[in-house]
Length: 395
Ligand code: ADP
Ligand code: MG
Image 1 (cartoon, rainbow, N blue to C red):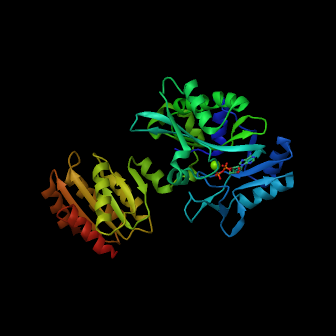
Image 2: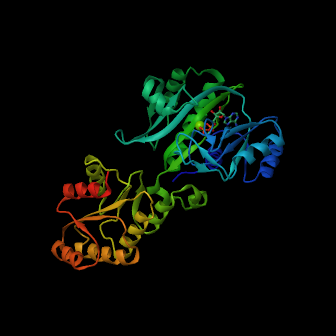
Image 3: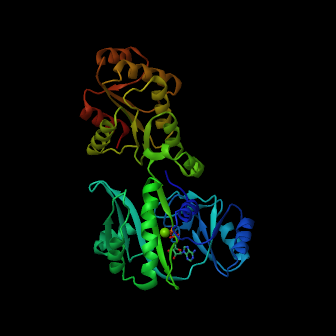
């Protein structure tokens, strides 16, 4: 689960991670009032979307309007907000369709001496969180990782202990930080690591982490993703959720207890079991097709879930064919076949449907499908299924 920059910064503040004052606004007038409230000469109006790269990103049809705008008066703040609110911002992380800006964050201007990078993720191989810092702040960290990986410095830390003082000193040396700024780092870095663990983050990224003219360390950006598996420990996070930022089909799937991830291709996949879903996507690609989604209906899918799964699949206009790949283990093939027949009555299939059934009660399941009105292309195994759906969708 992702949250907005302004929300992340409020959590930072509570966790003792220094941030600047700022006010969130949903109208140009609110943005102007926010500028006045901040009381400084310079403020920055920042589009709030669940994607990074806003500074370099631009509004669709208005290439001069970037997602982060400097304002030197209340009128400038109002104009900046008017140029962003209700418009679609395209960044390297949004895809070409962009994301609608519903809120802006008006933040005090910062006297930036240096822009650094700080990010914390879970390193599964090491089974520990890892703090990464770099002198290359403000840049795409993926680009830095690819071109100059030696400029990214890492320290793993024990979640129970946190980041230790010697680790901060090591990183400061690598970043060329000393004196008052190093003192600021000795507070900032462990506080961020503690925040990461206590909040059950998957990712906590501060890019840029700035050193100001007077040697303070401040989080100028905040990108936070919580671990969905830990959400039950944080009921308060539901207030932070912005459903407008989430893929509608993924929300629907979540409500129906289905694991669904929308992808770019045109072959809808309905599969039971995450491993089988992964192999199904792989084999579709191997035979030259592109999956439109990952969808795991789970081991014990019922008729309602399968019907809802078809509704979700077919609501994607890119879907030109559907591959159903079921291995009946706990879920019986007869249940799935019955659900398929039900779904075809309520949803109606107007795209080719390839079905591969295997496992418990497979003969009865196939018979049910054969005797039904559902127009099915039968497949004998997973390779056959992939070839048939790729042929049927004409890619
Ligand atoms: P994004 O990563 O989405 O582009 P950032 O929050 O990192 O958005 O902002 C982009 C750039 O804008 C920063 O690298 C920084 O140079 C500048 N910036 C952001 N906030 C402020 C601020 N409060 N004061 C001055 N400059 C800022
Ligand atoms: Mg940033």
